[in-house]
Length: 97
Image (cartoon, rainbow, N blue to C red; front, side):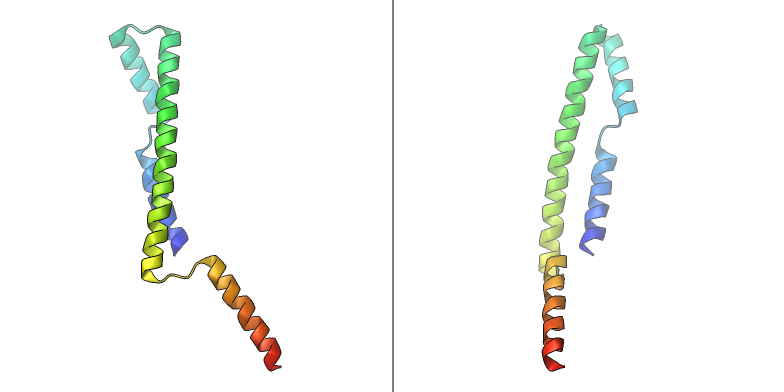
């Protein structure tokens, strides 16, 4: 369940990021309007892509934390907790035999 929520949020985050094609279209328009050189345009595009990547990473971290908090509130068991319980049950079953 945690993974489903996380994947849904990350998909939404991914949809919000600036795609390469859109960035290049934006750059082309700005180069025409602002008379930017090829090098200035590339530098500008690189800065936009870096900012988008940083924004995406921050959103992913926030999404992960929010999913984690929501799961804790709902009482969803984590994979680690479940694995520990499986091992404990296996040990108890061994003792009973």
